[in-house]
Length: 51
Image (cartoon, rainbow, N blue to C red; front, side):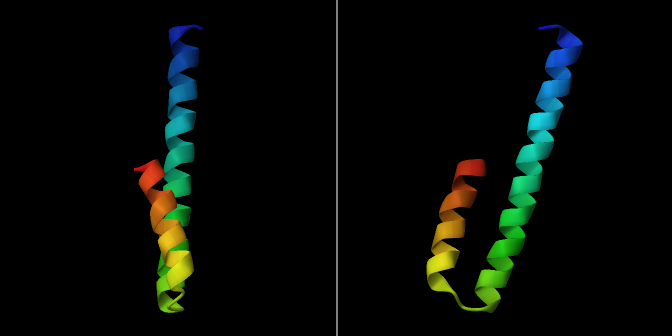
């Protein structure tokens, strides 16, 4: 794979990871507002995999 192509793929992967992280953070805020402890634990565990 060419260097330019590799850089493009890496940037896309990083953007995707950041979007997932932002989504999880938002979902966690909503779960906390609703005091949904089960969902909070699930989201925190999922966030740990993307950190």
